[in-house]
Length: 102
View 1 (tube, one colour):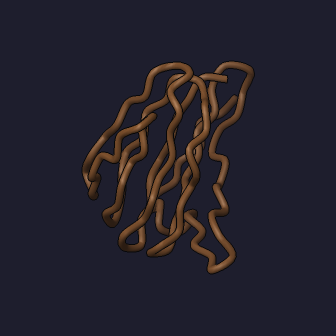
View 2 (cartoon, rainbow, N blue to C red):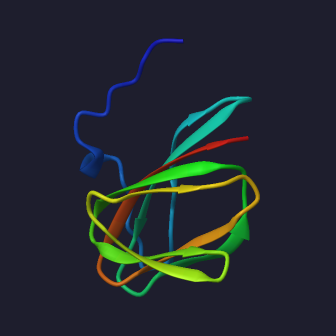
């Protein structure tokens, strides 16, 4: 498989008043990589998932991890363990890159 280059993530991310529309950048039998855009006030509810890393590209909000709310902003990276319940709440327009095992 050839590499895919995304010169500017802003050209790929999708923001919608209808809610998150994750863009799948890579999906295989071992890993899934998504680019997610949330408008201010939108959220991804808590859900269990495999171990994952999230890098905040733009904006600020909250990373929900089990019973915790962790403030995040552009430049932050959060790592969640396998089975942790996680989600996001956007204070401002928020974009992040997520990579997880499948």
